[in-house]
Image (tube, rainbow, N blue to C red; front, side, top):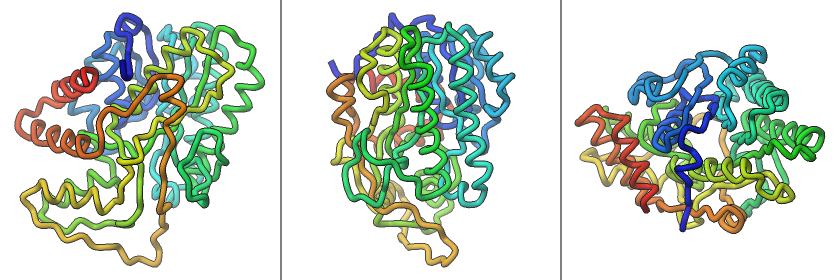
Amino acid sequence: MKNYINKNFWKNKKVFVTGHTGFKGSWLCIFLNSLGSKVTGYSLKPKSNPNLYKLSNVKKVIEKSIISDVRNYKKLHKSIKESKAEIVFHLAAQPLVRDSYRNPKETFDININGTINVIESVRNIPAVKSLVIITTDKVYDISKNRIFKEDDLLGGKDPYSASKVCCEYLFNSYLKSFFGNNKNQRIATVRAGNVIGGGDYSKDRLIPDIYKSIKNKQKIVLRNPNSVRPWQHVLEPLSGYIILAEKMYKKYNNKISPNWNFGPNISSCKSVKYIAQKFSKNSNCKIKIIKVKNKNYKSETDLLRLSNLKSKKYLKWYPKWNLNKTINKIIEWNNEVNETKKSFDICSKQIEEYLKD
């Protein structure tokens, strides 16, 4: 069975999620709620307005929401310990490449020190059995035109990517120094593709920018129309994280490299222009696609694809929704939210559909 998630395992399981107020973190909390888990969230306030966290009233469906900074070690450690969590998902980060050019110091500070604090906290809280650290597909050496596997060379071209590469190295150090012979705790890093889905209102992200343009009947402005990305619905990697966390909890073979790709199939790796045209075709608005001409613009990589063979082989995790279905689900989500305003119900419905597919 594809992507089998054991609901009996997750029912009443105490889980700690950093970054729970973000787009991906909110979806994860709703996902875990559908499995019956008892979730404690720890994060700063949402940056965007509107945001999925408030629209779906995530605070009401989790056990506790702690608004604080992952750089505050004492508060973080105390919060994890008091939650009595057995599984931790670390999503809190400064996640935007363009923001990392504007604020490189803050990006390194949040992403590196936040990750150190999470790992160090878990190391000193024996109740935690599994720690899943979310990094990024952008950790790889993008100068190589290839489909990246987990053991490929790491890079770090921009401040955001470099900060996540640092997280991978510090993770590896902690793994070898403290967790390698620890039979009671397992840790791993995970790398997803370009995650999209309903409820993303972040700045400098393609889908929110497209919807803003459609709403205002403006041109869609594309920074890199020909850039190819591994697009995937947010539920795809989240299901992988959940499956991996359960495997580690059950003392899954620790000899296999603890780094995992949860990317889409290669058929879903399409250009930015392709995505924009799909949304344009499904809207009532005629949109002209143009390319930004700005000497001060810092470009991102042109080609990025992930191998998911390892996750398929060892975790039996497979992408379920191809790119066209993903786009249809985003359109469906936005249309239903605009009509009913019931964001949480729509997220829950799509999670149920995903689990059944």
